[in-house]
Image 1 (cartoon, rainbow, N blue to C red):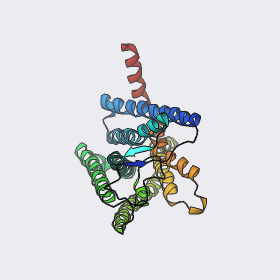
Image 2 (image 1 turned 90 degrees about the vertical axis):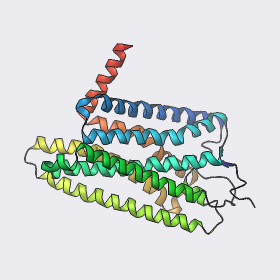
Image 3 (image 1 turned 30 degrees about the vertical axis):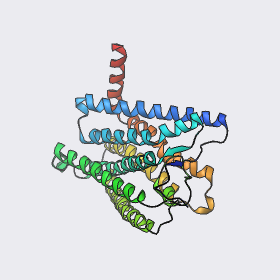
Image 4 (image 1 turned 45 degrees about the horizontal axis):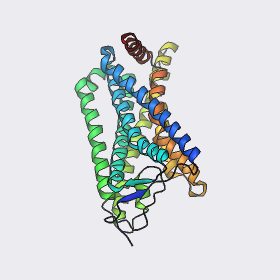
Length: 310
C-alpha cells in the first residue's frame, strides 16, 4: 500500500483511445486555446490602451479576461502535451500546482462576475450614487479583494488536499487535476476536513449566487420602468452579456459536479469537464463584445492599427 510520499506521478484520464482521436483532440484544444488567447489578449490590450474605456465595467472586464487566460493556460497545455505524446503522466508537484492555479482563477472569475453584477445594479438602480460607490479606488479595492479571496481559497484547499495520504492508486478520472478526483485516492479520514472546507466554500458560492439573483430581480424591475424603448434596450444590452457569462459559468459547473450518478458516464463526464473548464474562456470575450459597440470599436481600432504598422 503506497502513500503520497512515495507517489511521484499521477495518471490523468486519457482523452481518446486511438492515435487519430488523440491528434484530433490536440488540434481542437490548440484551436480553442489560440482563440481564447487571441480574444482575451485583444480585450486586455484594447481596455489598457483605450483611455475612453477606463470605466468600471471595462476595468472588471479586463480582470475577467486575465482569469480566462489563466484558467485555460492551467489545464489545456498539459492535456495537449499528453495527447500529442500519447502519455497520461503528471508529476505530483505539477498536479498540486494545477489544482492551485485552476481553483485560483476559477474562484477569481466567480468573485469578479459577482462584482460586475453589483456594477450593473448600481449603474441602473442607483445611478446618482454611481461615482461614489464605484470610484476608481473602490473598483481597485474590490478587484484586489476578489483576487486575494481567490488566492486564499485556492491555497487552503490545495494545502489541505495534498496533505492527505493517497493509497487508492494513482489514476485520476479527469484530464486535469482537480480536488474531487484526488480525494477519491485518499484513504485517510482527514478528508473530512477538506469536505468541511468545500462546504464553507459552497456557502460562499451560494451567497454570491443569491446576491446575483437578487440584484438582477432589482435590475429587471428598474429596466421595465424605463419609459423609452431605446432606454430599455440600452440597459438590457449591458446586462445580457454578463448574465449569459454567469449562466454559462454556473450551469456547466453545477451540472458537472451535482448531476445524478444515474446519468454519469466517462464520456459525459469528460465532455462536461471540457465544457466548463475549456470552452468558457474562449466564449466569454465573444459574448461580451457582441453587444458592446465601444469594445468592438476599440478592438477593431487596435487590430487595424497593428496591421497598418506591419
